[in-house]
Image 1 (cartoon, one colour):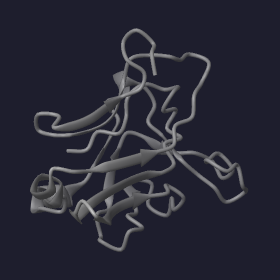
Image 2 (image 1 turned 180 degrees about the horizontal axis):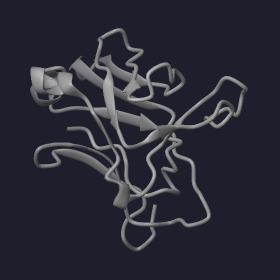
Image 3 (image 1 turned 60 degrees about the vertical axis):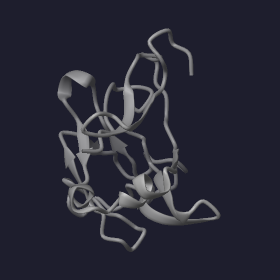
Length: 147
């Protein structure tokens, strides 16, 4: 499971770009997953724009209104992952079928994301994690408010 949600605020759901690069070899990375969160045609779906069909299922989180994304452009959106109490997350079913096995095979991964803050931050939260035992994950910020 890929958990991308936590507390309203720092993530504020405006996690507009999650980009995971995993390489077939460390010298040549391949794009395995890319979410811009701009297409809200199906509010329960995050479309993978990498071309690898790693679409995500959005649980509880919601798309922002147009103009609420990273650039602020009229057609730019993001996803608001609400609060920890709302149990929001993004599930990537293809992960269970081996979509990210190259991470293990190459012992390498790069994650890039854009986060937008809010007045009630910083709050300790997870931004993402790969399970079942959080082999790859990120907190922003840590429990002491450090980023």
